[in-house]
Amino acid sequence: MAWKVLMVCSSRGGFGVGLQSAVWRAVVGILRRTWAAGAAPFNSEHVVRARYSGSASELTVRWLVQGMTVDDAAFLLELARLGETRSWEAGVDVVREGDPADSMYLIHEGELRVVVAGDGGRTVELTTLHAGEFFGELMLSGDRRSATVQTVQRSWLTRVSATEVQILLASRPDLGLRLLQALGRRVRTLTRTVRNLASASVYGRLVGLFDTLAVDIDGQRVVPGPLSQQRIAERVGASKAMVNRLLQDLERGGYAQVTRDRIVLLKRLPSRW
Image (cartoon, rainbow, N blue to C red):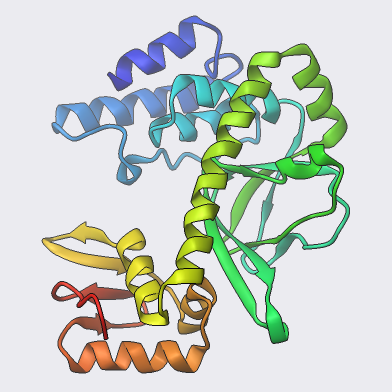
């Protein structure tokens, strides 16, 4: 299936156009070795790690190998060709809540978090963003930035101006539809986040966060990190002290093993605490 996706893109002049031969050979070689081993090729563990020269077509290789559909990759490629790609160090505010919104960003690599200012100066983390996603699309409404987006780790982003996006969408209504579909998915995600913050206890929100983030590793449910207590507090809308107490209680009860790099869920967490 993955091989067909790659060949279709190449034959249609998709990401294969302008791709340096060395990078292309590396991609094909990695994918062939992956299939030969009988592994699923569209798995984040098999992401191409070749260093990019910066062209949008090369960066799109990563999106496809990570499992994005051909249509979604083509949509982002159309936008990426209009912008400028650069790297951002960890801990940098790419956009800030309240600033004028004059551009949107495409994520090629890295992790970013979306935060808003809460009562009493508290920061609330709404979600995290990864490769293949974008942010800043509400610039089309003409309003100011509704949230701050900050890099969690070193990230590669393409910045596309509002003017360029508007011109492209005017000439390509099909791309506008894809943008609306992505917005719909984001609204559903944020609705679930707000509902959880409003209706569940702090413990309930913590359990919900762990359920969302946990992955299976060697037969264990693991919340990968590093994930500081401060970030957990911002994700669940609580104080760091409250999160610290709950994590200690879970450890004492034999439910979790908390380290700097990860949280191992040793058994099913109780519905109430």
